[in-house]
Length: 286
Image 1 (cartoon, rainbow, N blue to C red):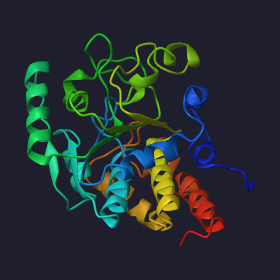
Image 2: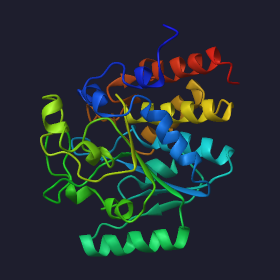
Image 3: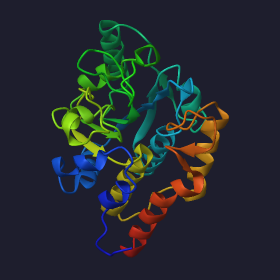
Image 4: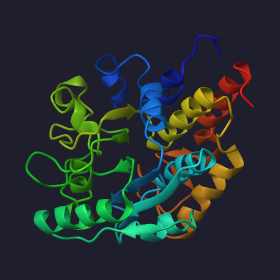
């Protein structure tokens, strides 16, 4: 692997959705910028995740592993952490963490905005993070990569992000919270990306070939900035995916109930973490 290979290079490899076409529209070191934003706002972090797969009638394995990996790293740095999801992904998130899981109700826009405001008032988060969390589109619906309406299976967690000034969004398809930052670019960047993309913005955006990978990239950047390796091991990642599947989760690409992430087996999926670990080793981050 070339010495010049960056975090962004690693998390955008094996792009199967065209998301790498968004890279020219992001800062050169967009992952490190997101990590620095978080470090500039110590305190409590709320991490939203959970993406419902219509064909599998269940949440997918991409999202919760990356969320708890980020949460674990931030706890190492002294942050308080809690997770936000809805009833459809609750089991998947609870399968990989013992920390608090806030279940956002399925409700109208006004009620959702009010609930989001209550969550912010109660927890007083310094930062919000979304990883692989479906976003509202311009017509007020949630849509998957095929353009199908999945609104019945998504709480409007977007409204919480609209009310907070410091946030990071991590996505791999153009339809996740944070991808609204590039809503003018996404429809024409690649034919595989959605024509009706996310409209929900975040302060910083991390684009990756797999959202879990984007989460691991964020941890790698936090590790470099703190000179401490906080990445999970490959075995830990595999255990998280297995726990998600045991709780009912499916592979996001096929909708099948199997230990895959975005169409990749556990061993194939490990390429990102393996390369990020090698990157930290080269930088002598232990």
